[in-house]
Length: 238
Image (cartoon, rainbow, N blue to C red; front, side, top):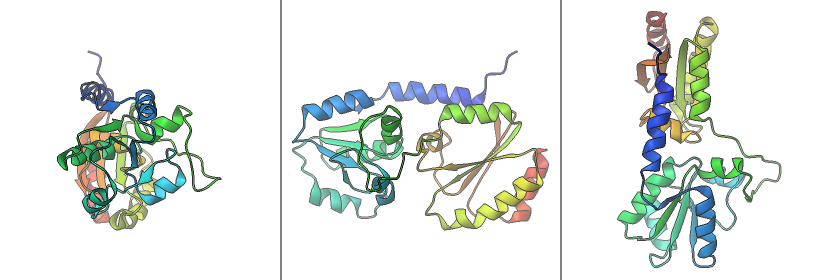
């Protein structure tokens, strides 16, 4: 029997789920068209971090970091519930959460851009940048992950974030283990920039580690780990 790759299946489920969402989740083209219909009245919100926003953002977008502890207070101070709100992030996860949050606060007309800034820039849509030398960084896609899994029998995924202290402490340990075990493919995925993949794997803590063997997830761990403990896990996977 032909094995159906688990990552391919996850991609399929993710795609079907995305297609079943309500009409407030718009494709980049529909998002752009709807925004133009409401030009001068719409409130365009980039919910990424200030660093991401500076590298590149949609024109006329204001930056309200969804990860900011004061996000609710800032929203109440800066946004008008009587006007439509258009939100986006890098690939869609944060903006979806932000859209739900805004509706809970009483914003009735909220539109979310499917695929986020990564999809927008990959489609050659116009954007503004605070740094003229910066080029958009493409998100690591589910298709990319599927390709890595299908060409490596043992893959160790490290879901990290640039601001995460424990992630930085684990980096030399993970690199050392990968160097000592050539049969392991170490794949580092920024959970914020590739939040579509983090969502599929239900990553709720950073760092999170996932081991995929022959196309199947066989182990996962979270937080700082002792080098010897992680080596023991790897040894059992061989």
